[in-house]
Length: 174
Image 1 (cartoon, one colour):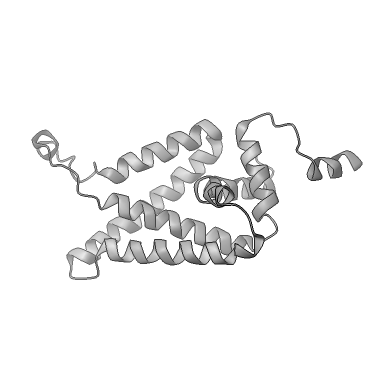
Image 2: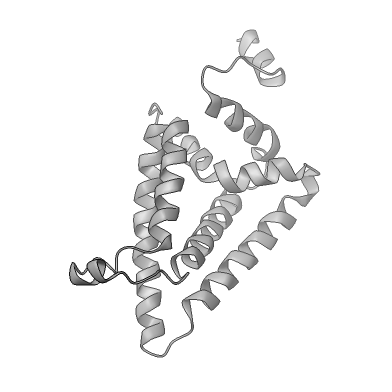
């Protein structure tokens, strides 16, 4: 038992690169309000994904003929890049994140329908969500006095770090 306690305070040996990131996030944000961090991280991710989704994509004739123009957008490339990066770090966690991204994609499409029917712009809604969640996340963790690098790690690796917490509670390997 004493060995485990020592590993917590010292930098342990990491067998995979992702463990180093998770260890750093645990040391920095593990003691904070994880429920608030979880909600804000996923809201920020949703807002950014929605903004990328709405960047105009060129309409190629062959895509229109195949009726693929509605599915191919910059959001598709964003999703592919994010999942690829997460897949390289922790495959099982990337699958969980892919499920979340699928749900988020559904809601972005619903926002597009609302905008088409005269509702608020998807860009406006996603901008507000991203900005408010980023500011709240930053100030809720400002008391930790950590570097901007650790905050960027939270924004980029944070979603799969949160999934790792759930996997740990369920005793699932990742």
